[in-house]
Length: 191
Image (spheres, helix red, strand yellow):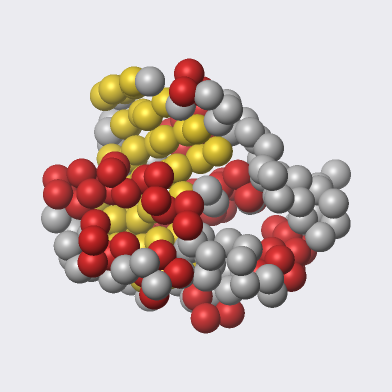
């Protein structure tokens, strides 16, 4: 039996005490997709759901380079300065290397929250293999490791707007990009 998400958040808080852990660098692999979504949907507001420490914005200035200067709202329940969600929906929401850190039994609630918070599009970057990092309790930091098909099926239960899913693992053949539209039809699936 797994732990509750609250106890996982406590474990991630403990990991965040190390300045080099979860700085926000997982965004780098995904900016090419996010730039396209921002160009297509012209959002005025964004939310980085699971942003880590936020160094991708505070140090690397990713929002200036890739998001037309739009500084996203930052949310990470394990980082005190980013543990509050915005009060109103945003145009675009994205999570990169986040969902696999959430216990499977909590994902439905997280997806409900995410899709309620987004008006135009949602992007998920999901790793499908174990993490290198271990939680303080010795468990792998990726607590939900599933295939792209499993993730798509799970997300389809909640998606009511255009959703991009990018799953990555050990090799290029494990990398898949999938775009779903609001009627849940496959738009594209490519290696």
